[in-house]
Image (tube, rainbow, N blue to C red; front, top):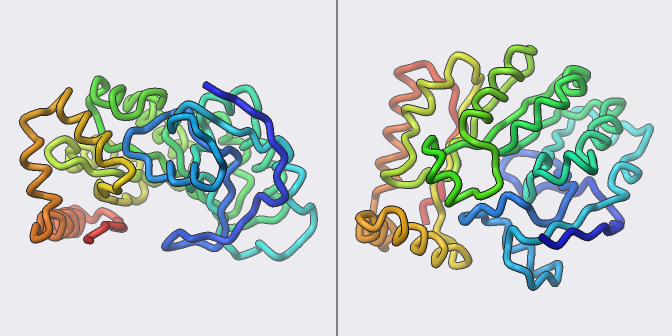
Amino acid sequence: MKIKEIKVKSIIVKSNLPEGDFVINPYIGCQHGCKYCYARFMKRFTGHIEPWGEFVDIKINAPDLIPKDTNKYKDKSITIGSVTDPYQPIERQYKLTRKILERLIPLQPHLGLMTKSDLVVRDIDLFKQFKDCIVALSLSILDDKIRKELEPLSSSPNKRINALKEVHKNKIPTALFISPIFPEITDWKKIINKTKSFVDEYWFENLNLYPSIKREIYRFLKKNKPELIEKYKNIYSKNSNYWDIEERNIKEFCKKNKINCRIYFHHN
């Protein structure tokens, strides 16, 4: 793992997310090394030649770039962790995310965090100081053996579920991002039934076979689920309506069970 400390000129940047005004990414790269991560496109802009998951740049001056007194972000949303995980293992050492949160408290934005790590519970004391805050954990694989293949250094499913319980217990709104949904592997109904007593809303995203990850996914299938290779080829063929049907099933299930949901499917 190549770790490097860098200084940046800005840390709160305008968001390209479907919902949201600004994003903060305390790191470049991510130790979790998820095989399906869309954020590997960042390599085009950073000059890294190392494989995705084998480098992290630490934005060492990030907390100092957050203004101390401004109304610019009041009633605006700030999401922490759009192209990196703010609670990846290196956060235990650098505490960048925690320092950023401390600086954001006086600004009182609508705060959202996304992570795959149970380390998020460390900062519950800070989340409580925001008037509007939601903590989202991403989870789409309950089988820990498969999780280790797809997300090598992420927290186990059980640790993430327990983290959601702890955040909810402290009266902080929670979201579970079931993403990406792997056909025939992700059991989203089971995930919902296992967690619905302590999750306020569910977000859904399907597996998008970007050209940058396609080879990785088929390599994973060949090793772990070879019987699914042909099915995936059919699902991702031009005339497939698989994801239209799956989206309809999710909406019907959530409506029937009074589940708050948002769907962010890629249909192309």
